[in-house]
Length: 275
Image 1 (cartoon, one colour):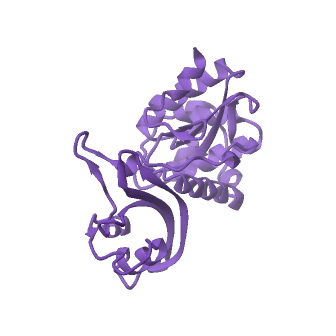
Image 2 (cartoon, helix red, strand yellow; image 1 turned 180 degrees about the vertical axis):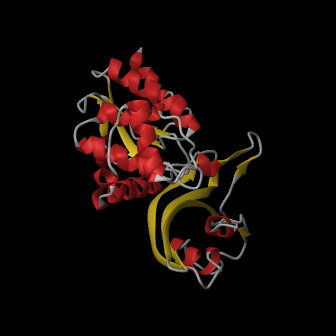
Image 3 (tube, helix red, strand yellow; image 1 turned 90 degrees about the horizontal axis):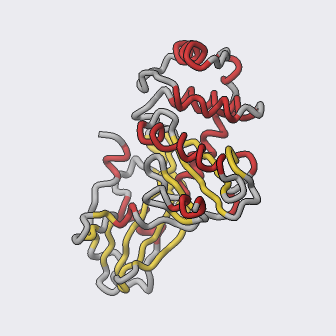
């Protein structure tokens, strides 16, 4: 069982805030959520809090926590739902009418700092509407969605700006560790369109062999690179920084889309601007 699986067993805690004036997120994580003494909570960062519409007694607290376990460090985003009136807290809250876990619907508002020039891949930064996508170039859903999104934005640069953040799902697609560094290398040279060709690559997503990956890129897409071209600390750090940004927006899967600062579960809100 993975570290993630061990940590996120859903539980309702009925004694969480007994005798306390208000909910304390850091205390909850350190003394209630993380039970394993071998896991050290290095840092807790509050991302935001929101009252649940139609449920006045419940509030959602969104956060990231930096954990260390057996020499490994990991930053994990999550949400806890708290009912102070009933002294209850839960890591999952299901809407029985829809069957939907509300932790997938509750997201923070995106800061304008995410609209930085480095991440702009299409459209005009001065356009009235901003789209941000978190993506893995080997995620099947991303392959089916991101190229069309890019095409739409390029066709309407007066209305939309598109910003791209790496979110490689390495447990599912190890190949993306190399591919995201390739994309960073190409983008650093101003070859954004060439970087986005990687969405057309046909390769086993479980591939780890860097030489095989680069050979496939050359054969299929005409992208000719050496290992030394992409094996640079700044590229690895750029991908890590993107993943940290994803965590701060409670991104758990790909593709995740924000439109004008708000989470877009249907990934289609941007089409309003195309009319």
